Length: 264
Length: 308
Image 1: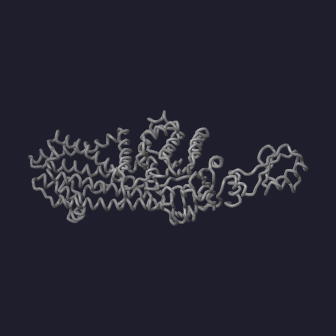
Image 2: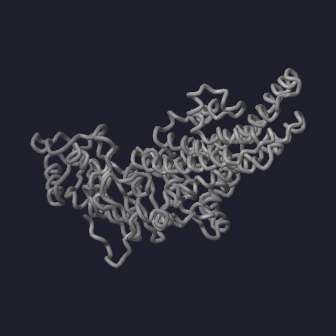
Image 3: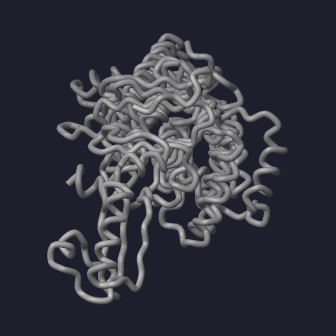
């Protein structure tokens, strides 16, 4: 295990925090999409409630979307933070400094976690105020569900960074789209059994599917800790695999000159 | 290769049979390079010679295909974090976070390099590089020259034991470039170790205690600038004859464009004196100049004779 420095981690976190503080569009974005999603799905929920005579559980849509938003934000924040360095031609400065790649990840994760929590707090308050749905209604399962989903989001974020390190700016678009690729499969707003049986097998391989299933079960008053544990453990495995991919991609980038400045 | 000026001095950098290939292209070809503490070494060569690749290898931004780099006696690959704390660089081809102010950028890099007493040092750096008035300006709002000074401040803030400069004055106007050169000269004069790549040979000649010419990724010449020029074994002769020179004598000269000056390279001062005397006798001279080659002359001679 390399010796990590809190000061260097703070340095990267400070850089990302200052970027956020200076940019109204970026600050706005922390809250914009989560709020938009909860407003949209809240209205859909209200409509479905009126149509189903009150038998429809609000947590199914609003709760699912709030939790999905946390995963998505975690992935996007990590990937965009890396792109910021690339856009400002700062990668050579960062990766020729004593900074360890794990320190870079930890700093990005730290800032990302703060943003996810701020956005989560905002949308939860909104959902409760306008639709009477409190995220806490999911119960103690929430305490495992949020870290598991954020960890999986970071795993996807690291995978995205790894892809950018390997293939360059041509895959920048993954920063915004990669997590969305999984959205239909992880069953954030519908139960797993809605999927085609073949897709259920694929979905079962994705840790967030189990987390969302556990959250739905908890909302319905039948908590399923085993399902949550599978989702949590799976997310940690995915994070470890993504870290390995990120480190190997960094080595690949050093091999192929993707971090280096281009002189002459 | 150039012998170390003092064997007791610390070896700051050793590149040992360093090779970097990108597919079929060999950018650095078994390069051996040693830099001792206190040396200011100019790394020169034509475009594509491998200068920037060498700098990137030393910074750990590239991994060598073969060979290795030692910094302060430790292997870069295995002691990366420890040795990179003692190295910094400024390059015309690298930016800084544009949405951060000058002072914020310096704060971030002070953290990354774990600079002690960073507030005081940032303050001193703002004064030293005349950045005080720009401290609260975002980097994106600065001119190219101002940005270069901020990049330099970032590099000098950590008080590096090895400073790498990759064409630090490229694309600057002459006045700003001169100012940046003065800042660097002041730094280098304090017994610092600097590896300086540049296309501006006058700047290298003025500030470097040693130059290494590389071509096709190999060091082809290494020594003190004046010594190298002397080693080139040439003396440059310029004459302005009053009339045409006899054919045999004229064949020794090249006409310079414009006002009648002729230029020749003599093997040594005696041959140069012969050329001048013969020209004076044959046609009389309105003007003459005799000098040893500058680095720029040497570069042109090498480009013509060795690099094709």
